Image 1 (cartoon, rainbow, N blue to C red):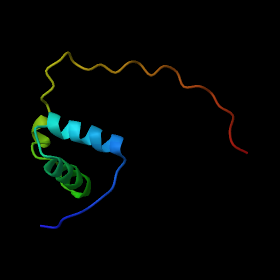
Image 2: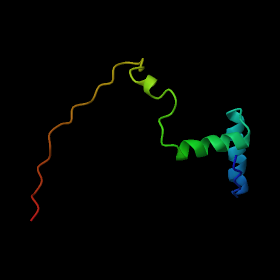
Image 3: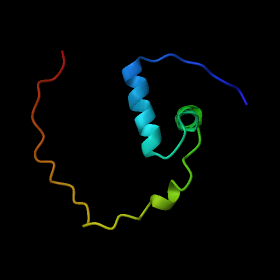
Image 4: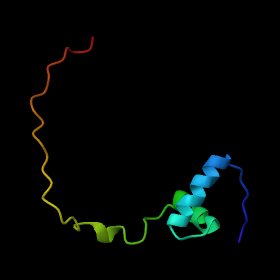
Length: 74
C-alpha cells in the first residue's frame, strides 16, 4: 500500500483530527476514505437503493409563472 505525505496548516489539521474522531476513525483511515471517494469513478455503495425511499410529504413543484418578454438579439 502506498504511503503519502502532505502538509496542512495547524488549524486545518486540528479540524481534520476532530472530524476523524467524530467518524470514529483514525486520521489515516479517514483521509484514505476521502481520497478514495474523490478519485473513484464508481457510484457509492447503496446509492441506487436510495431511489424511492423518501418518506416525507410529497414534493411539489411551484408554478413557474409567466415568461417575461425580451427583446431579440440583433
